[in-house]
Amino acid sequence: MAAKSDGAPVSLRNDIPPECLSGSAQRSPQCHPARKRYSLLDCSWTICALLVFFSDGASDLWLAADYYLRRNYWWFALTLVFVIVPSVVVQVLSFRWFAYDYSDTNDSSTAAAAVVAASGAKSHFSTKDSEQGGAGGDAAVGALPTTGTMGGARGCCRALMWLFQCFIHIFQLAQVWRYVHALYLGVQSRWRGDHERRHYYWRMMFESADISMLRLLESFLKSAPQLVLQLSIMVQASQVLPLQGLSASASLVSLSWMIASYQKVLRDSRDDKLPMSYKAVIVQILWHLFTIGARTMAFALFASVFQLYFGIFIVAHWCIMTFWIIQGETDFCMSKWEEIIYNMVVGIVYVFCWFSVREGRTRCRMLVYSVVVFIENVALTTFWYLYRAPQTSDFNSLLTVCMVASSYALGTFFMFVYYCLLHPDGPISGWGWGVPEEIAVESCLSPASSLPPDVVASPPRTLQRTKGGDREQMGGANSDVFLVRTLKRGVKATLPPLAPSTEGPVIRIDLPRKKYPAWDAHFIDRRLRKTILVLEGAAPVTPRIQYRCLGSPTEVMEYETTV
Image (cartoon, rainbow, N blue to C red; front, side, top):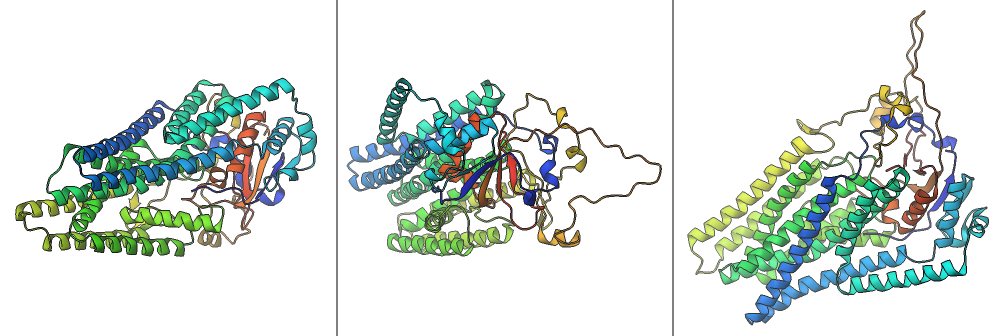
């Protein structure tokens, strides 16, 4: 899910190179949509996510203890395995991230970059090697005041933090700690002053990205197989215990919640995508709740009769989906092998539900996947109905089949509600996707001073990038960004007064920007993240992030880190 730095150089400049300048580079903050602050809804959402996590884990452990007391040792072992193994995997990954974030490998380089940012001097900063800081980096580090007392206190605090994190991860509480930490950072970003507010908001966004990736992985390694297992036990035993129903319901809610939450955090983290409203998130939860419910019921029915063939079916479906994803050439991680591992994990997700992994119109791919899943659900349910146990009555069998069909139909209904009414990019128009509202050019020419000074900005939304066909219609790739209209004689051109622009430092990342729905490199690359946090906290003027420019100079991939 995350990757270490692959040596992408990062430079810190106070000027933007001329080859990356465009008309959009000089736009004022007024051309960005409404700025966002950490709200009460965000706080409530984090608390609810924490409750969902607790209910899922506690119900599974309670059910495992109940199986043990009933002397159903085989079911007890399977239930406990699907709780412990995924939790250990997530704890190891979380501790690896903590160890890298809290290590001393880049302290000198990040400190040098922070001093350079605060002084406004021109310098280069590279993440390729901590000894390869640019000219002026060593001098900057030498200028840092260090005393023995401060060093001892800092070392003691670091040792306590390491002990605390070891305790947290040994007792399988990494997710709880990260949820609480994200909640704390969000509240601090609301209460602090403007500069500290931006810094805390950045840290909250990074923490939210981490917990969403960890919880998504845990949900499909733990909640999904746990749901299929408990439903299979119910069908085989022809009875439903209250704890079984509670555990299955908690697993289903956890799965649906984390898919929608992941999409929301991913959209909130990117400046080139509009954020997802909480109405859309709730509808997406209902969409996945009913479709995954129908899918897992079909799995459980088939597995209660054909255990061996069910395993073969799952492995075959996972292999086909994984190869389909790899063939699409995704770009999520920073290295080839981590990309393959990520695709294998997404292949597990595709066993249960749809998950967008490529930019562009997903209509055709989603239609193909939905048709395949529908055919599989019908086939699995039909085989169970034909070869079910003799003690199962026809009435109960037909009722079960109707439950599977109605659940899938309800999920499809909520999917259409989401795409037709609540999708952030606009509703579906006819057979194509709706076009999101464009930002008027006049708003970009308004004075920057009209923006209230106390407004806290989220990562701003950029203008839509020009596609290939649009550039040809506009006269080629080298045509002007803004068309100049001739004025009639005697008419004076009136231009609004522009506020003087105060250019701050620019963090230039020598990487092309990843396409949605991938995370930006500074969200998954721990070294870039550490550098940005230090610069954000030390620079008097908010630094801006600029990725490597691709294609024509009009496609500038840079945005402010004001959040």
